[in-house]
Length: 181
Image (cartoon, rainbow, N blue to C red; front, side, top):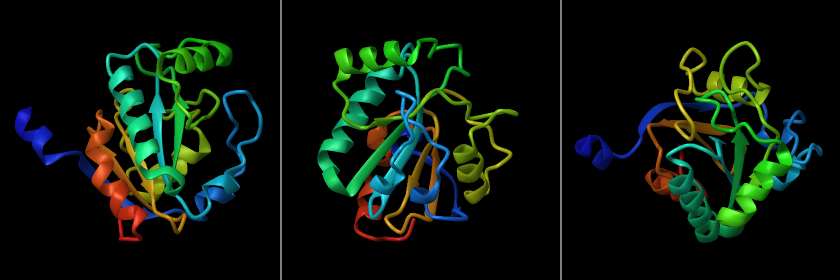
C-alpha cells in the first residue's frame, strides 16, 4: 500500500470529450438550477463524485478546498454527490449543502445527486468514461475517480485510486499550464 501511495494515482485513461465540457447542458446545481457551464470555459475542470458520510470525506473536502484555493480562477471543481456506495450520501440537497457549508466551507460547485455507474449513469459520467476509454470500468467508491479536463475543455484524463486530492495536484498543475494530459 505504501509503495502504491508513493506512485500517486493510477492513470486509467486519457482522451477527448465529444464536445467541450462547458457545452454540456444537462448538469444542475445542488439547488436544482441549471449549472452555468460557461463558468468552466478556459479553466481546468476536476470532476469527482462526493459523499458526506464516507471515511474519505474529510480528507477529500479539505484537499479539494486546498486545490481550489491554490489554483483559484484556473480551476473549477465539480463535486457530484452520489449515494451509490454504501448509501453514504443519503441527504436531501439542503442537508448536503448544510453539511458541506458547516463542516468545510467549500466554495466549489456541487451538482444535484447523480449516479456514476449503472443504467442511470449521468450523461456527463457516461461521456467522461467513454472519452477516457474506461466506459466499462466502474467507479468503485466515493471520491475514487478524479476526472481532470484541460483548459481546452476537451482533453480529459481519469485518475483512479486518487482518494487524496493531493495525488492529482501535479496533473491539475500541468493542465493549468496547458500541458497535455
